[in-house]
Length: 374
Image 1 (cartoon, helix red, strand yellow):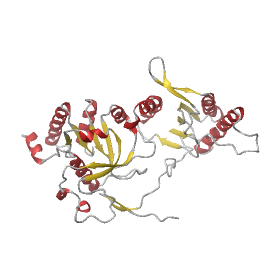
Image 2 (cartoon, one colour):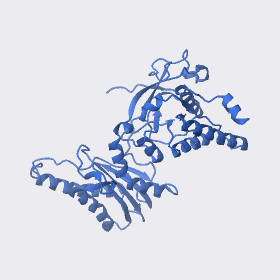
Image 3 (tube, one colour):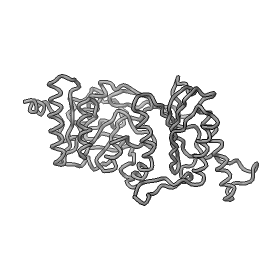
Image 4 (cartoon, helix red, strand yellow):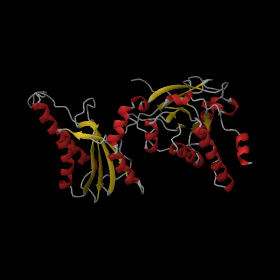
């Protein structure tokens, strides 16, 4: 058994990497209690479109046409409502090799929700095995161990705040559209794990001590090598070749003076964006987020640097997805993905802002700020 080795993460320090599971249940949550969930189940063999076929309808809208097996699986979910009246199956969205279900647990369940998911899986297996037997691909009972239809376990998203249900249902309903968009633009949605990005002569005096050329620890995996940075990335890599890449950096306070400055910054960056400039930002402060949203709304390009990395099968959320499909977005992540929620540290904020400055050819300066304030 190989021993885990620590890795140096710039802005964080030395850490042992954690092996994450998207199917891990939320600790201390009662999965029998009243709650709304979005469940995702993947096929054990995702190489075959067993549940249906993705295509376009007569109006050119993406749609999933269920297979006979897909219809059978859908029926089993709605049949679960009859067996357990505490449930309301709000949505079942089949995809070719996975499915999403939105479940409302109206009253306390007699058993863990995972047990009910297991019931649907077992019933679905029977339909799958019947199909395999009819196709001559499964030997008579007892002569062969039949394969499961679904992979072990499932992923759940728990509704926790107001407005989340609408987003959850829209995400499920839009899944065929998003899948078709990814299929039509595969390179824009491919996660690259180690993208080397050239830097524009970074000012190492402003970097964190751990990133200083003289003080950099051995075995740092090249994250802060002079002249380049290494990121996981998804989106349009060609945005890094744009002639104007502008760092956005805003103060995180709500004084009237700062709010006026943010409005002037937004006007400045949108004007430069109309002329081909690319906004570069970690989008940490409220002002930085506001300017990034304005750029996306105006169909202008954005390079965003994230504290968290990308899990397997990652798809950008919300406006980011549409911007990615249009080639207007590049998402960069210098550190590995983590499942748990973390509060970003001041050291990480400084490091991300340094990275934004390093890959911009127009880093934000005090002189620019003073000019906008006059």
